Amino acid sequence: MDKKQAIDQGIMLPVMEAFYTIQGEGVHTGTPAYFIRLGGCDVGCVWCDVKESWEAEKWPILSVEDIVNQALEYPGRLVVITGGEPLMYELGPLTGLLKKNGFTINIETSGAHPFSGTFDWVCFSPKKFKKPHPSIYEHANELKVVIFHKSDFDFAEKHAVLVNKNCHKLLQPEWSKSSVHLGSIIDYVKSRPEWKISLQTHKFMDIP
Ligand code: SF4
Image (cartoon, rainbow, N blue to C red; front, top):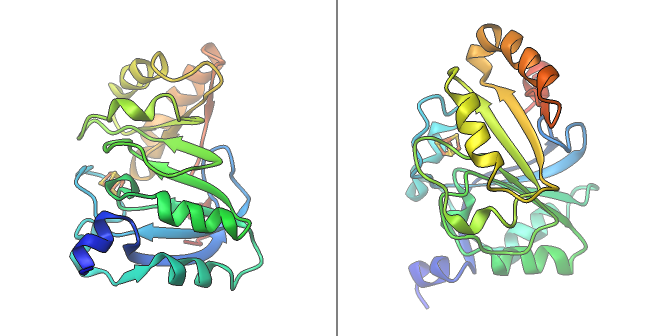
């Protein structure tokens, strides 16, 4: 089997970086976690803070065995699969092997590709730049919408009606626009308490 076939089947994946840190945002804020950042993204957010992830070809292709063995070197047993856009890949083999090794598995995704893999927690962060695939809505445990422009509140509500009723709903100021939008996010959440605020606390802590 060549590399392309192995990637198509999710047996090998492009890994931009993997590191042990603290989950800085969303419902699991403050939890130590091993992040696996897959290379490749075709969503194209203007404010993306990992634009270097977009070209998958730039990053080493690793077997899922190697990815999991590296994760096992750290004491935490929470893995966060992120990107790039991780659902560009078939994630069944990676999540299956992580689960066999006792990991809790979370994903951060824009939902722009068909859902694959088995997760303990799905953080769905839809982006205006590429429409989510319909398969994401039934899986989302957390809807996290980045507020970059005031029209993003309406965008958030459009997705909120599509996720299941137990899904946590979070609004997160885009880092560079935080001083512009934080006040209106606070007012919004106070008047619509089904929403909560997520902050990028890893940026305050100056950790990855
Ligand atoms: S989906 Fe994520 S990685 Fe892709 S462009 Fe948007 S913020 Fe960047």
